[in-house]
Length: 52
Image 1 (cartoon, rainbow, N blue to C red):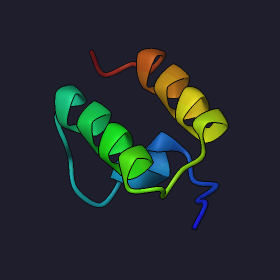
Image 2: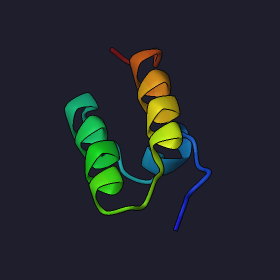
Image 3: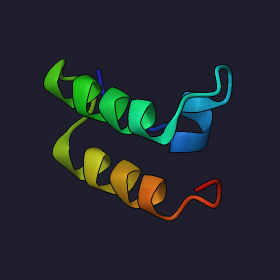
């Protein structure tokens, strides 16, 4: 299953720490939720967020 969600969409329901957000992206990739291209995009969005 490949999600086309943004990081905002993934984490909007529950406020996660930046580290937890990154771990979730990594774990979702390991569990074949995302393809590598999507992981790259999510990590880039994660790096560019304004909350840190």
